[in-house]
Length: 276
Image (cartoon, rainbow, N blue to C red):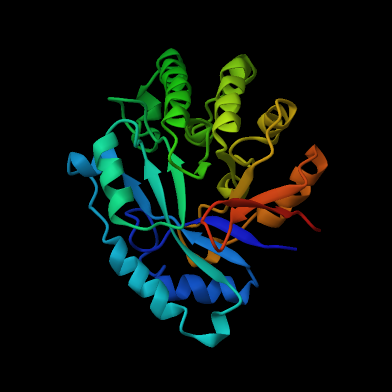
């Protein structure tokens, strides 16, 4: 089995465990016999531009990766310099700047908030009514299509991100009525050669489902989707690769035969067979 985890955060992400050092991430991944990992610290361009989030020195990150890789005990794990690039379509100049300045191996794109709205992480759900939340979700889902058309990245992360917080706060909306919108999104990423991330963080939380759900993954498969990256979205070293073997099993049942990883020569997606 080729083990991959393409969504890991270090202490440089504002919401990660301070103990999640880059050296410890590689050590943990090697101990779990993971073949390829990608460090994807948060870089939400809109929040960095307005000063809400700190900037990140990715050259320092790369230097730390190179130093960690000097340990021969960790040589079996390929350690990629990645980024979780948030809302690049909202501040394309800043997104272009960070991508031009740094030679990333893997670019994971995410949408944490629709334009001019709060990150769903920070919403006060007890004082926000359901119609307002569903309207925000619809704007979010529509902007995902805009982000996919922006392109310039390998994989699209956790496309049901708001649902993570809806369910945590015992708010339930029917996802079926958004199937046509997600179908449109899938058709865009398929056309542009962008992978869909299966984010397993929900499997270790009370919502007990990945993002997207297995039901939406069936829809993705039905319209011709094949490119899948897998990520634990670990914010501590203990969660690296968490839920991914189970995701492999379920993906196989749905009919996916491969996961996408990064090729060593050209930093493009290549397909590796799922083996259980």
